[in-house]
Image (cartoon, rainbow over all chains, first blue to last red; front, side, top):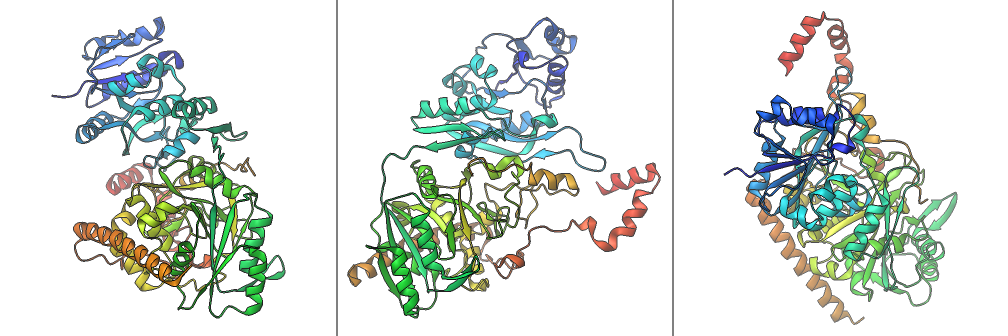
Length: 522
Length: 88
């Protein structure tokens, strides 16, 4: 038997003609909904809901509570948005296949495209709870069930709530979350960017017992959630090096000493344990400089084998005592003083095993905003200006990613041990990609944040050449993940480092880069 | 830290990694069979910034297509729409 499908639209939120657009889309839907709940409808709306089309459509229109079984499908549709003709088919098929899903969302298109261009389409990544705290990236159309909606406060409350509030409430009560990689609704161009409400996020954190400060960004509609880190756990900094010298700001320095010096002098986190793993052939002078920069109590471990970054990190970690491990490359320099605290805050969520910052090149361009597998591992927005906000403001929100660069990443020690550390079969490249995917396999999440910023003079200390055996190993282990990254979208252009829809034309590129807005926290 | 403890701890890490690796490889083999090669994937051969692709030219914007694009742009509307219908 087909499940009853209830559409919920807050008529009061729309202005003349908008509800009619939504109504027409319901009538054009291939699978007709059984009920349409329209709280806040006025006489002008009743002209639509009592029209002959509706009277003959077998859609029951109501303004009050609807007695439906808990497993009935509820679709929250904003007044003025139009449901695509096959959207309900897709939704019901998905819920029939995964009955435990209580929160479902999909893509949307916005207005007509320009001449010879497709209409702008918002492509959404898979379920990202941390990102949802920053903004309603799931869009305005959310699918749930009557049971979940009741637990989340009832249909009446949800129908009139702010879209961000509604999404957070429903997400909290759903056992399982999913996305459909198809267009489910059409909206206006103005609704293209996700909404955000700091108040909704504050209430959400209170309900879940998350101790955090939630501040709205002064420029963009995004919320920054800063978890309060009351304890000061020991963070073990593991830095592999061979004492390479490099020129930074016209001054020749030992890179490792510079990385440690800036971490200790510029950074504000006090409880650090430093472990330096240096190659046997590291010059004595460089060793002295590193020892001096690492300070008293640092552990220096000698590594007497051919270059293997993964092995050196593992060796450093087994010498550490900290609850958290900070992977630190010697060619990095901390920029935001509270970078370690910011990453620690993200790891306060027990489901998160690793977090990484925004990495940039010395000339200011982005080096990495997290990994994306499309299908080869790329760093998102590499070589792009840090002034752009990215598609759907993704460069301004902390969010789930498939991985982060191990040049500067904070890892939960128990998770590191659980997955066996970095794989030594990747001496130079992809050890971080493999490590992140192992963490996901173990049920953890990996986060990236724009609120911690580190400079990376990438590959100053090692050969950048990709080894064929590293490619073969990553393929043997993770080809399925490379082909289907949950934080990518099948309709995006592959082999690109930006979130760009796979269509021709300038519009897709400008949507991918997003508006220009500086990071407020900097 | 005594060397034995370090060797033992590293061996445990290696064993855990092998376990995760074997599970992942089995899953990949179940999907793709024995061919897990990524030869058809377009890997940049170096991770150095200048060698990484950041933006590709759409095929339609390739230089040699410019005259064809010009002709298409100036086709009478019915012909242009017919061409688009066929292309779809």
